[in-house]
Structure formats: C-alpha cells, structure tokens
Image (tube, rainbow, N blue to C red; front, side):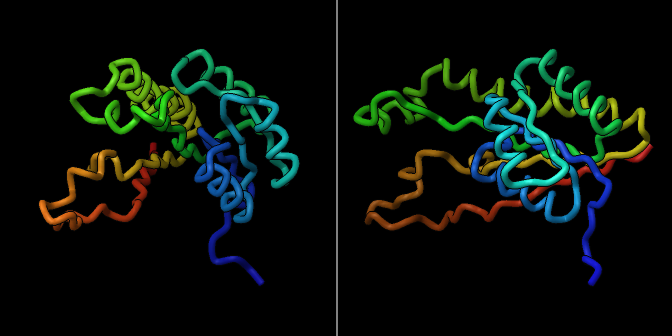
Length: 188
C-alpha cells in the first residue's frame, strides 16, 4: 500500500536531533522515507542514534551557534547525499540552574542571569538564523527546499507559570497554546 505522505529520496537535516522532540522528528522523517542527518553537539551519539534507529541516515556534529560548524555540516551532507531538501530547526536550549534550591528565584525575570539570557539568544535565535542562512543558501542554489522552524510555547508564555495564578490559587484565564509549526517553502 502506498503511503499518503512520502519523503522518499529526500534528505532532511534535524538540528538538536538528540533531544526528545528531535529524536521523534528524526524517526517520523525516516518513517516517511527521508534520509535523516542527525545533527547535535555529540557526534558519536548522533552516529549511534542514526545507526540504531534509522536507515540510510547519518549523524553529524553541529554547534548551531557557530557559522563554521553549520558550513562544515552542510559540506559533509552534500558530500554524502549531494543535496539537502529539508531543514528542521529544532535545536534549543533549556534553562539550567545549578542549584535547584535557588532555581525558582533565579528564573524570575528580575533575577534571570544575563549569561543564560545570552546563551538562549545564541542557540534559539542566532542558531536558527545561521542554519537557515547557510543551508537556505544551498536550497536557493538547488532551487528547492523546505525550512521548518520549531518553537516553544515559551515564545508567547513565561517559563514562570506562577504569574498565571490568581489570588485564589487558580490558573488565570490564560491557557498556554498547543505547539504549532511554521513551515516555509523556498521557491526560486
């Protein structure tokens, strides 16, 4: 029986591929027929995941905050597959506070460490920009490709959920939205 949705002969790069959502993106793409480039900070774990769970796929080191790393990834993918059809910008950074006892206090806006803010900007914004710029340029050269940007609900809600609690201890009228995906087709 034919699948209704096929990515046969497509090459997909997934950034942040070793995270929970990233692994599921890789599996879904591969199940639809795509060869998947599992891209994250630990190259050996990327290779191991690709070898164990995917077929006709590979793992590659990627630091989305460094343009040279994105270029190296693209060059490696092109040397293996000769094209890139899909980029899933999935890499993201989660707030990590060293001491759980002070995490609640540190996560408040007025106390949020500038170093964590900058790291979030570097990964969550600059990383998407660099990957889209570098790989998108190749897609323009190829005259085809899709870039899919994955975002967190924290784009429109605060990580400190206590601000949504009313004076009676109930969640206020605000309800965090379901995840959504913005897909941009490149047509040249």
